[in-house]
Length: 277
Ligand SMILES: [Zn+2]
Image (cartoon, rainbow, N blue to C red; front, top):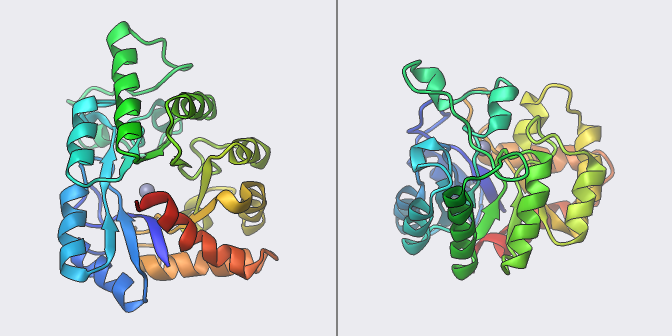
């Protein structure tokens, strides 16, 4: 299996293990690799070190939050030129995060201002902001990298998909679209999957999303069709170890009547094809 979304220490919050510990867990469970994600720093160097020491396909990238300078072409160019594959649009510093009262970096220190990040149609961009967004998308297209929607809203995800497609980006992943942020319905998700967006469902949603059920996740999985990607998004001290978290998600969806072979692909071949060149 290949887990397209996991968090490890060091981080600004507690994690279930350090990079090397998490990597060993995946190796022991027979995984071929994983994507190391962090909200507030590039994981490209950390992932490369793990890939070299473990022989697994460990992949990193950068999330375009305030610590990366927001939607910042320099951060994107640096990440993609040094082997990174993933660009997440704003997550912890997206405007959705603030309005949903989810954790932000500036919760740690009130001296930091609480400005948030957005793209059209939520944001009415100044000229330089639009140029930055356009250049970020061009860089992703040039490197044939993976554009992930982060915690942008439903309307922003749609806008971003259209922009991505017009620029030739084919690797487009809706980051847990049925989670609290962005909170897309199965019908909305199905519309984007039908035109080529990959759809992530995470094991994190099973345990930590208020109001979400296994039935609800199964409806999303059905809407995603062959664009489904299953991931753990684990790393929280109160979640199972990441490989087991992903295995439990596959099992939970299997219990909802989804085809086992399809679920296995969604946790293995599909994310590998999405992420690796
Ligand atoms: Zn995550």
